[in-house]
Amino acid sequence: QVQLVESGGGLVQAGGSLRLSCAASGRTLSNYAMGWFRQAPGKERQFVAAIRWSGGSTLYADSVKGRFIISRDNAKNTVYLQMNTLKPEDTAVYYCAAQPKPREILVRTGSYDYWGQGTQVTVSS
Image 1: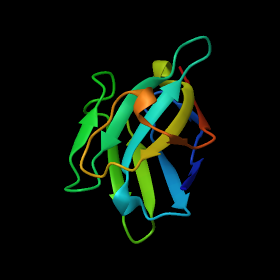
Image 2: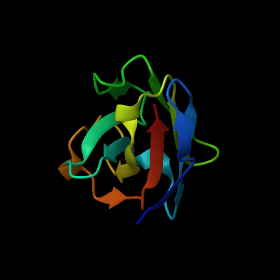
Image 3: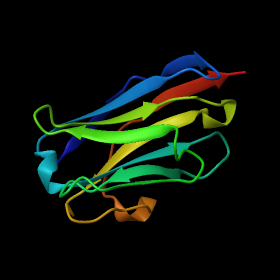
Image 4: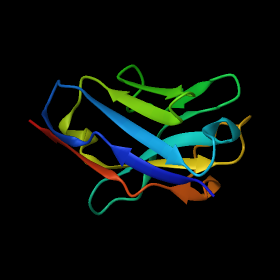
């Protein structure tokens, strides 16, 4: 079983940047598809970005395309979400997720069995 711990959230002004990290333990992430999701108060958890561990293909929600970048570091067993040109509407708790399907890109919350505890991102206007 894999354990996920997110970090890197915080308060930033609109137009700024943050980099979120998702460190895994218990299993090597080379056997997992990975995703980032976010949940704002009163809203459902929504897809942000995903990466297929095999080959490194990526997919983004339209709302973050061109601003966010998902990447991985095999040696550190860590997945990152670089967030640039942040907007107030990006404010949410951000979660990383893992599923042992390394050849797939998964965008639905129900497709993932393993989740981190979340990290708060707040973008002020």
